[in-house]
Image (tube, rainbow, N blue to C red):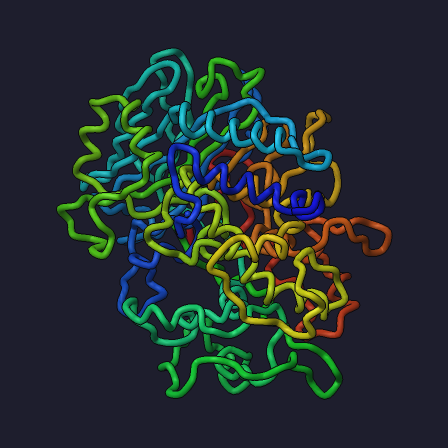
Length: 552
């Protein structure tokens, strides 16, 4: 093997190293969290009702309120079932948290085996030796919430609080925690039909039952611009609401595409798969929102500057809800966690089963394909293989369509003139295609995210999605990927992963907000001339806790 080939394979060595930590196989084909997941409770299917176990988003950012010390805001949102502000008493929600020091980027220079092993060791330390703290919420039939704070440095305790109002919880060690458990406006502003059109996801447009697993993502190339002759998904002016609340029966015949070009109108304009319209406008969610002092989360707030958080939904086994999800999951890393847990709180969990997890936006809908067995939360190290093969599959679709728009893609597609449908069984042939995409630093649009002025390395896609946590940097404003603020347009930022961040436009490097810049689309031959997703929420966010807007 040449030095060039060895260099290209070094990140793959890391991927395999991460997958093998704790005796895990790198050939396991699994992963883990956002809107429309997992499949077993996903009401996008024709025969699945909405479920309170369906987690939507995990927000997290440093609070601007520094009274009494630094604080972090965490907000877990989920389906408002049975209705806004009313909770299903068969459900239990968790926000899991741990704080760690910021790790210097080991890939600032050309990656070396030593740097890879150091990074792998850091991952092992975080996920095989550290125990997370936990906020556990269950709401009874009386509408009161039982809130347990478990395994924090100051100990564990339980409180009962009213729902749908801001409350303050006093901890035994003298801290004050703000909490809100109730209904709010959905803070996820996004053109979901456009996203599903880009991946040719049939259940958004057609009546597809859960059991018809071959009719989910159809064997049509992913793309940002419409494909000539893709009548299954192209916008039809005679049916403008198709995929936006209107579903049709699946047509008979092949559910595929045999064309070889992008669609253009008589003026030579491409047709965007996105509309820029907020599909979540006017919708409500239920939420658990907390504001915690950093000194309550860790005994070393001066050095533990990264607050890692993710959410989980659990349902009572006796309720027989989410019946296709087994009562027991087999994740070896979770077994390590249970050995460290407080026994009095673990006894309660014997009556529940894990349904959904939520850390990074689009980790599930885009990368995990919403599979039930990929709801692993932070403990998704064993899913690294799928991360590589899935990104390569997406890259063959998004990469050529990005280049067709006159932009540079980070995906290596050999100059394909049109999007390609290609899948991979093994990560080895896929990795050279995605090497640059996975390991490139994602540029921020300006320096406003770094509120401390400290030397903070830019983040890379692999670090963002493995592990699947919201890693909030307390020395920033929490703008994604250094957390996730309510106002962050994460759907458009996710698409920026496929851009080449070493390229420039108008004298400025590509960055995560580039595709949200209206002036970019004004100069492209495309209709409609709009950023892919809306630039702001349908309601103004609040300036004070709980920050999410009032429900409709």
